[in-house]
Image (cartoon, rainbow, N blue to C red; front, top):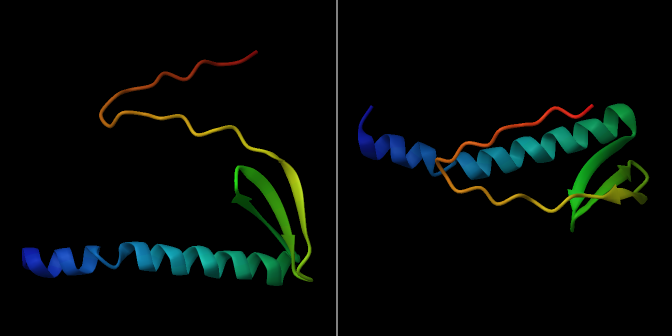
Length: 76
């Protein structure tokens, strides 16, 4: 596969990912009647009938410089 062909395929990754997330969301609504999603810093439960309920606020994202390592501390 040529470099240009690979770059062309890679350019479609965001589009494919968006489609996959949308499909998973709709499948969750169809099968379970509800789905969870993050919107505007909040965790939201969406139901198949169109209603939504805020579950809780989400923590702000942590900025990480590419190439750095972060250690996870165990709580407890």
